[in-house]
Length: 132
Image 1 (cartoon, rainbow, N blue to C red):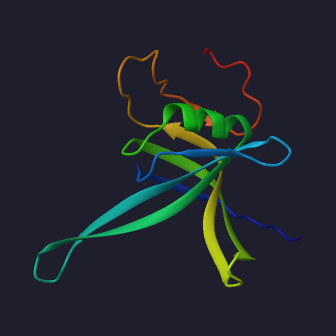
Image 2 (cartoon, rainbow, N blue to C red):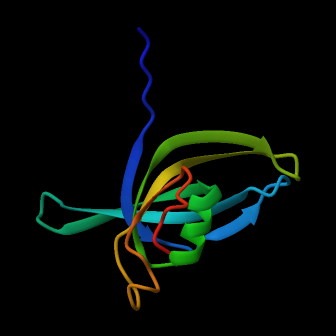
């Protein structure tokens, strides 16, 4: 029996404001960059840090909510699948990107009142029953 798993979970801070655009068919898609920092100590006892950057893609209603409620500097938990894709740029050069296709995003901090920024997990499937 063949079993496949492609799942990634990341907690970090947004390094950019989300950018929402629409496909030619009108489907919303939002992208943003998420940074995670790992700290450790060297053999000398000095503290070092290493930051990893992730490109996150959120589709449909999830993308709309991310665009509405998240901004640069905010903390978020992203769960999804890892995807690599390649294309040829307008200049004829090959391009490639590794990205997380989000299926849920949880906002981990709040700015302003609770009415302004809900602290919820938003799955990518239809979430019409949300309280806002």
